[in-house]
Length: 353
Ligand SMILES: [Zn+2]
Image (cartoon, rainbow, N blue to C red):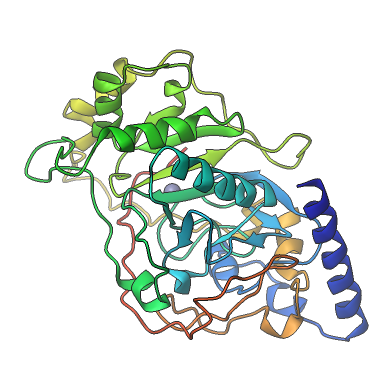
């Protein structure tokens, strides 16, 4: 870990000095302020320099991100065309460790969904958070035995753990005690700050888990999250630019905060006053709304070459550049060009805080 971080820093410094020798002005594209999701959603590669999370999970960015390899022991990354498998080294290491530990309890392997964009920040589609390289979505669907092609990783559907014919109910044909073991294991790592699951899943855990409940309070109920669970790491020790979230309340969370989800309140459509003026569309989050450092992160040279730093048009379904992670090996199997695919997008949700 230590060694790896040093290696990364060296690689980044090297990249930085190479780029500064080439008189490439890639900063101009970002010289002006703009909607943050446009700016960050159009950058294909991470910035050079040290790995740092700036700001909070739902309002920030990251520098020096590394990519999760497309596959490794116990995991495969999904939806590669989205180019969202970039995170802080601590998160990437956590995923690799958790994937191996999960196999030890009988989980065949993890399918990894979105982490963050190369430089974090808000996204053009989906997710209020995932902005600082410390959040990862892990599918409830189990990994198949074979290494999937890039095409299969685009088209393999999610599996919901809910019985959609009922109100907020886990489907026992899909859910098993192994699912519970997996998410409880995820919660047990000290660096895991909280985990988001559907309220029905949290309820299921509350009702069925007979083991140690020390870490169950980290598992929080929220809309969606029936096809994946969302793991959030705490700000790494000493990461002074990373803004921590209020800690979860003590206890197992099998309380009023969970019961509320089973009332009508969260699901009611807000009453409209027929005489009220139509609300102004919300102002987009601008780069200048993010921590100051994020403008510099957006304008910084790319970790492995400036020419690929800006993607002219953002098309999630189109071929994404094969962006190698600095100082980490890309495993084979997905070196094939990524085909156009109908990328399912999460429907809009109330923001996740
Ligand atoms: Zn998520």
